[in-house]
Structures are given as C-alpha cells and as structure tokens.
Amino acid sequence: MKSIKNTFSTTRSENRPALIVYLTVGHPSIKDTPSLVKAAISGGADIIELGIPFSDPLAEGPTIQSSSAAALTLGVTPETCLETCATLRNDGIETPIILMGYYNPILAYGVESFITKAAQVGVNGLIIVDLPPEEGEAVKRKCAENDLDLVMLLTPTSTNERIELISSQASGFIYCVSITGVTGARSSLPATLPNLVQSIREHTDLPIAIGFGISQREHIESLAKYADGAVIGSAIIDAINEATPKERVSRVQNFVKTLSLQ
Image (cartoon, rainbow, N blue to C red; front, side, top):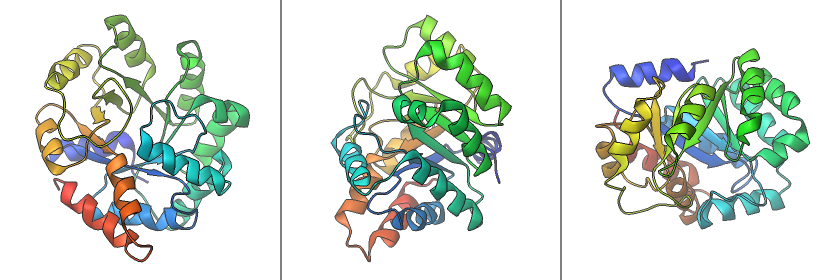
C-alpha cells in the first residue's frame, strides 16, 4: 500500500501535481463505488478521496450535496464507508485512500474507534471538514498512533494564526480551498490563488493540494506551476450523473484520463 507522502514524492519527481479524485460512497449505489474507484485509478488518479455522506454538508455545493443525500437514502453509514475501503484493499488496490467527512457522524461512531477501524481497513488519511480546533490535537494524536494522516483545510480567509495552527496539526498534505464558498465545478480559478499557496508555504513543508472549483485539465495545468496536488470532485459526480448505468465506469475512467498530467 502506497503512502500519501510517497505519492507526492513520486508526482514531484515527475514534475506534476498529484491528481486526487473525490467520490461519494454509495453514489450512485453502494455496489458501484468500488468499480468507480478502480475506474478513476485506471484513468490516472494518484489518491482517492471517499466522501462519507452527511445530512448537512455545509461546505458542499449542490452536486455533492445531492450525491450525499442519495447515498443516505440507500442507508450508507460511516461503517459502510469503512467496509468499502476494506473491499478495495482486499481487491488489491494500493492507491492511497482518504476518508472525508464531517465531525458529527464520526463523533457518533466514536472518534477513537473510527480512527482505529479506518487504519485497520487500510485508510491512509482522514479529512474532517468541520473539526473543531480544540479537538485537533487529540484527533492528531490518535491518527498518529494509527499511522493515519490528518489532512486539514485552509481557506482564502484563513489568518496567519490559523495557518500556523492548522500547519502544526496537519500531516500528509494541506488541502487549500481555492475560493470562499462551497464546492462545485467552475470555469476559472481565482487569480489570488498563487499568493494564498505561497502564504501557506511560509508555515509548512507539507505538500499543498488545491480543491473546490477544479473541473478541467486547464485548471490543473495552471496550478501545476505553484501547487502539489489538485482535488476534483463535483465534476466527477456530474460525469457519473450524466452517464447511463452501463457508461459510468468508462465515463469516469475517460474523464480522469483527460485531467491527468501523467
């Protein structure tokens, strides 16, 4: 199983950003998720980010919100997400997997139990979008005990003090939110993004990946000049939604292939 750190080392040596592909577990169905993950990897995904469905995903735009709601109606729980990760590892998938979710479902599961189980099923990293800062150190320690990276988010409105705090708690990489607002495909990236990345680099040596709004190859080619990774989510969900059931796997593989700079 490849680590997040080694993956970024590889992509840096190849002079390209790591391509991080987001999929909601259970969308469009629980049984479809492993095949869509494999399709994304075949297309060139370097890291897989699996979303844990939640009823109130504040940072998500309409596309990911609807995929999360659909998964919840199918009964997807944090346990389902852990089982999906176990299935992927049992199928021989070596690509790093990050679980992304919100604090309440993980708290309800039991934070320590969730982290321990995640490590057992082969998860490499965890993103808790709304992790309270005062809980950060305890979660970081538990993740470190289980060799799990705690990936944390910074935004265009993050103060220097916030950047310093998050940089001290994070591992694996920093998830840099490109815009103030929610997720969703956009036509262009903010002109201020390089400056934001530079300000974060002054506080950390961790790789920096850009997310929110990335939807096309041109975005990734642009951010390759100053960032270490690109996260694509809503555009992938859109591609799945636009495809017929028989087309979904090939649509995801082909779309990711158009984004990959490998």
